[in-house]
Image (cartoon, rainbow, N blue to C red; front, side, top):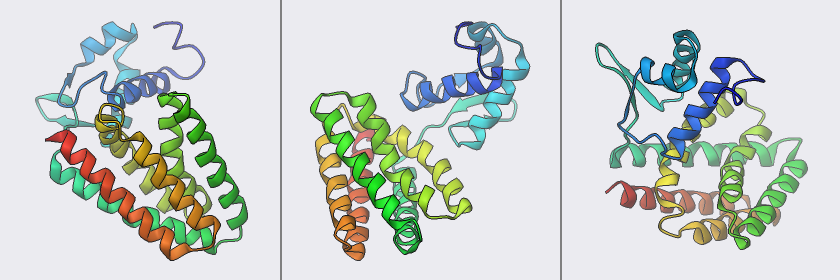
Length: 217
């Protein structure tokens, strides 16, 4: 572990490791985290661990309970509905901004590249790389929406979406359906059919919401 914590600040490195462990459920939802157990794991003092945990609280990935400690967030069916419905609203708003902005052509080129590369990863069954691009498919819109507040809101929400997605994507073989829906949204955007692309994006996230609720249940 010491070798991992060498290039960045201790708190930054610990934050990234814990965040990945939570999103991939190496650290399970509902699991308690103690300063002592994390200190033993990372062989560091309490200070960088507290800093890392503070960032995870801000990401809504862990919850601090007074007199109890830190617990990894456990999302309910209602949480899943709220998260995916809000994500649909934000994604569609970002898409409108992108397509009305001065960098529209660059955005469309990057979106097309993401979809094509993710298709290749899926064909090769390289699911980790595919999953990273699947997240990027949604986040790229916020980079070109030219609205920093919208981008920050989406990034925070995306952490919980990734957590939910990891509950169903690989185990239930939904990846091909997700890829097909991404390709359809992209094709509609490339064809200039913005309203149809927005409708398709909402349907796609409704499907993801259904998958997540099934996985939680």
